[in-house]
Length: 463
Ligand SMILES: Nc1ncnc2c1ncn2[C@@H]1O[C@H](COP(=O)(O)OP(=O)(O)OP(=O)(O)O)[C@@H](O)[C@H]1O
Ligand SMILES: [Mg+2]
Image (cartoon, rainbow, N blue to C red; front, side):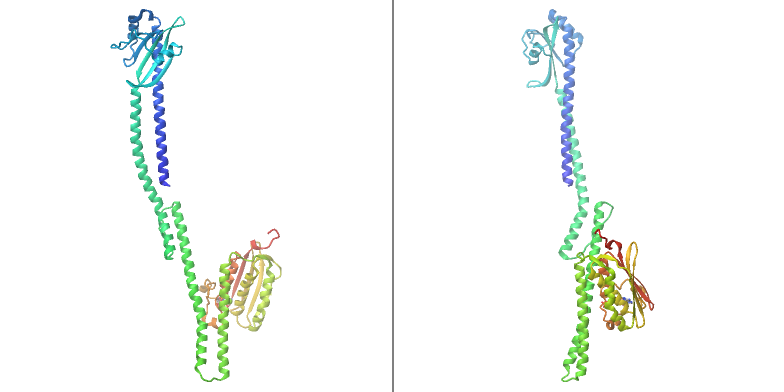
């Protein structure tokens, strides 16, 4: 790009020089021609009165006029025979001088012309009629060398050439510096991207300054950071997932091994072991199912099946599904959602989100506790509030509970059968509807989970 600009500038400089030189040359030639023509007219005017007296009289008049010695003055009669020539060594007098300009003049047209002659280089010639009593009686022919002008223009041309050369060197020099300044960060990008491609490392580029490239660099670095975080999350997720899957598997293995060690066993012991093995298998399949659901949601985030759904109906269904669990745990499940609100949502995912939160509330509330489900519709949003009088969540854990496999009390989790994936699934589902989940909780008193859905997804008949 810089090179292109460099050549454009050079070309412009070159064209401008040519145009300028041409104009200057034209101007000086025109001026000289006009001057010579004026002078010829004056000479013609004066000599018209003396032409009959021939040589002496004319010579005196011309002398009196003090014409520049560089201008050759020739006067002819109407037959183009030279009557006077101001060159002393001239042998033209008495001879016919057939100059083009003279012939033109005798034909009635005064002429001025610049042309190149082998012998004397560039000359300006002019021929003006000498008129007396409306008749052409002769011609004044003035000629002068234009070499001065040519040399002057040549001089300018040489100087321009030198100036152009110096300017080009300067421009070239600065262009290359500029090119380096511009391309250095781009080369850094390319190197960083190539490294990411080849070695699967996520790199940052150095950024200094405040120009557009720097901003690009900052954006690039932010992106790298995001990628790094995502990569880190992915690693943690994979290692957590393997760990979570390995735990029930090793329990099963241990129990199966112990069963195999004995030759004969009491059927009741065998049953007990098999019961435990069965529980671990249930746990495994719960984890696998939830993992599958999560990864499916990751992959399909942009392809939700948005339909017109009454959110009250979804909460109803969750309530009905969890009522038996609440009864079994002797937890009072309070439900007060009065109005229908039609929203544009993916019904299954929203069900999953609400289910996981109500399920937690029942799970982490002890007997005689209370869980309530309510719904508010305000101008900005729809809020589904699930409140419990359960064990609560320590303040410093609240940020973490949405993390995959995260459980506050890991020891208890084994009893409750928790996988630590429920809230990640809920958050993912709500986020994919542009919503959010807020939590407030106090240990020993209870927790409030608030699912906030933006009013933008409330169904209106126009969409
Ligand atoms: N209502 C609640 N009261 C107290 N603690 C809660 C509540 N909801 C969630 N938690 C805490 O947050 C953790 C994460 O919840 P999450 O639903 O993701 O996992 P889980 O309930 O343990 O397992 P899963 O839901 O997959 O069966 C829980 O283990 C629990 O410690
Ligand atoms: Mg849960």
